[in-house]
Length: 106
View (spheres, helix red, strand yellow):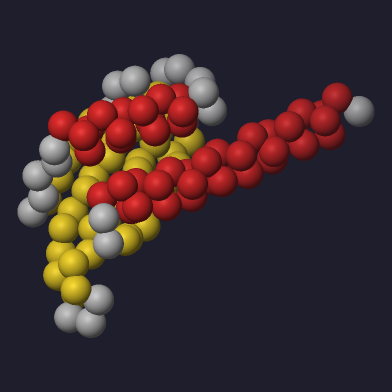
């Protein structure tokens, strides 16, 4: 799966990239081409929480934009949380779309 990745104050290892690609492949099943996925990972030091990794997904598909952002202590945890939030948003959109089609067909 193709996605645009940008990082800020963080360097990803080969394992992190491979795991991210595998997780993004699962997300692809919920999308309909053409779509664009922008992923941003940033590392920051919070004054109370210590090291914080923030992951942000922006997905553009069929004129719709889906956005999710989550923070955690590791790259993989941040990606997992953001992925779960994105899937939830996509499912909610698909349900609304199905309900709209059901109303129009009556």
